[in-house]
Length: 335
Image (cartoon, rainbow, N blue to C red; front, side):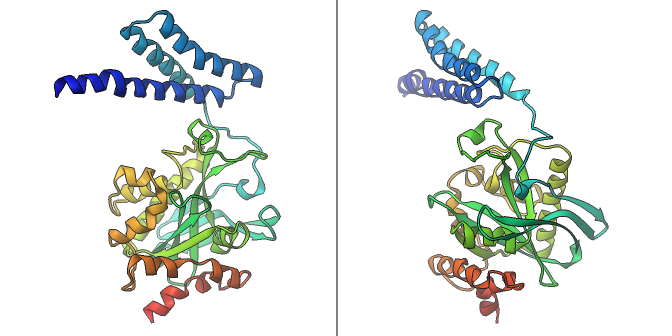
């Protein structure tokens, strides 16, 4: 058994780790801010080919480990010093960042987005200041948004108040003008992270009515106290990012995993690390299995089918009661 483990470690596990580190280093150099572009690409491909070539020239088990590891550490040191931009040119949808002012139980949110869409790319953005009373926080609803593969979803949440208002927040990458998203690029400090606090008619309707993506809405079983702790915790991070931007990362700082981190930091409940990072498309099923969703007595397949809001959102469209209209499932079941 010891011999088998030694063989696996030496010839399979360690080489795979070193190859992974080398490929990450190549990606970090390829997507680095080095200018001009020709120099950046030459450095990246030179590194990609140079380290293996050096290993072959000085072939020994020791150098086969030392050279890739040394190359990785050098690139990591370079990557570490890259700082987020503070004066980039952003499109209107993420031009401003939200920040909150606390006065006891009263919270004033500045730059809450409330966009009115004609198409995905044609819209008017209003940035509003809204006031909320923490004593009136009651519910947390979860939106699960699919745009391609069922295994991956964008998850955002909405806080409900006793006066019937809802406030949604979506953790997203913040693109510069002309910049497009790439999951692989998102591993290499390409975008800043942003918490988009918005009206549901903006953030949900954009996905259901204009992007034509599948969106499911669930009511959680969190208590008002748990909802309040999560709300405050997310606003504190929002204020921190407003003051000092940080990078988005596909694995460590994106939508679902960041919300999961907030849930843990707010002492709401614990979520295993892998569930926050892997196969986010199963988020609703995991919440259901842990008893964190209002099931209304339905098995998961039926609950999921009834929770899809696309038709309701498209019918409601410009209706001022948009948030109420997409929650007919909750209203019917409660009544």
